[in-house]
Image 1 (tube, rainbow, N blue to C red):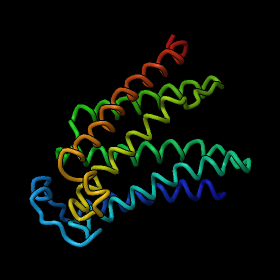
Image 2 (image 1 turned 90 degrees about the vertical axis):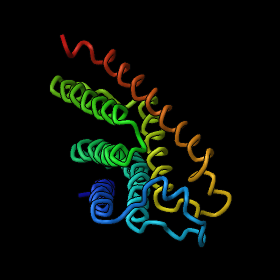
Image 3 (image 1 turned 135 degrees about the horizontal axis):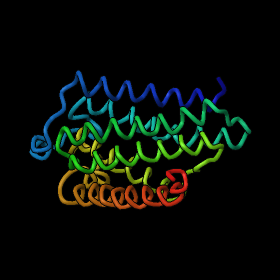
Amino acid sequence: MNLPNRITATRLGTVLVFTVALAVGDVPASAEIEAAQPGAWFSPLSVAACVALWAFVIGAISDFFDGHLARKYGLVTNLGKLLDPLADKILVCAAFVYLSAVEMCPFWVTVLILFREFWVTGLRQLAALRGEALAADRSGKWKTGLQLGFCIACLFHLAYGGNAPQPLRWLSIGTGGEWCRGVFLWGSVLLTVGSGVHYALRGRHLLK
């Protein structure tokens, strides 16, 4: 297993850490976070949410490095082509499922995202069976970036609340945090639909 594939495998490991941390730890409700008195900078309100946040951040960062290294040094492999998009989807979908469970993301948005990911994966498999390739387009990359931004903003809110340094505190609590998360969320929804339709048009010949 080469270095890019090891990085991808590490991203799958961060999903495990993310899931276990939120499954066994206590995370305060959003109302409790808003009512909490600010404490020391970067003193977590919830250790479980803090662990989940940084596991997710590491996973998101690794998404850039594995693909970059594979292309730069000619280390693209069939295993990497399988694991890289799979790890991305598992990481993002796990976060959206959790955020819907704690009512920070509408349930229908999570269903829409899951549907789009399964839909595109199915089209890619059909293309592969015919010896074709449906490469990721620019809208899909922006979609992923906005989804990761929304998840990180929400997890930051759950982990630190008002205990972030003053320049970052508005991202977590109050109307500033809600505005920021809203931009990420609805931007990702628009690109989820748009990129899904784009893939459908590109792969419509595969369904005939």
